[in-house]
Amino acid sequence: MPVYALVELTVTDASWIEEYSKNVSPLLLSYGGKYLTSSDNIDMLEGEGKPQYAGVVEFPSRELAMQFYNSKEYKPYRDARLAGSKSRYLVIDVENGES
Image (cartoon, rainbow, N blue to C red; front, side, top):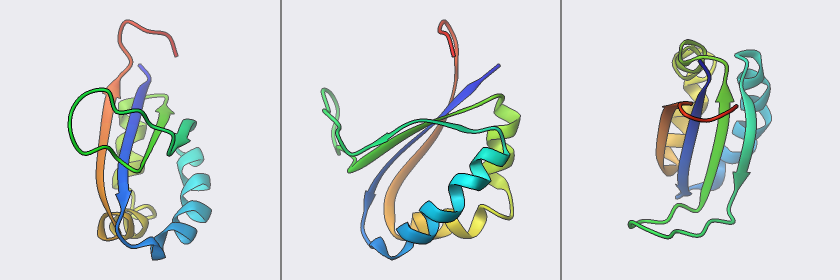
């Protein structure tokens, strides 16, 4: 079953962004990930703490999403993102919908 990875972040130190953008996209694709959107055009209708950016990636399975997230190749980029932003990374099953 496909899953979506939803990433919300607000940048606190932009020094990581160029390397992350250049290297994470090909890595994500190698795990079957497909970008659905990545944008700073966000209307927050409920809740608190609107993120600066949000992105949604579709993976063919939870297993592949977790393999990507926990891979040794992604770890330095994940660590840089966490150090240079306030982030939330969620993995959500695609249920009652179409992918």
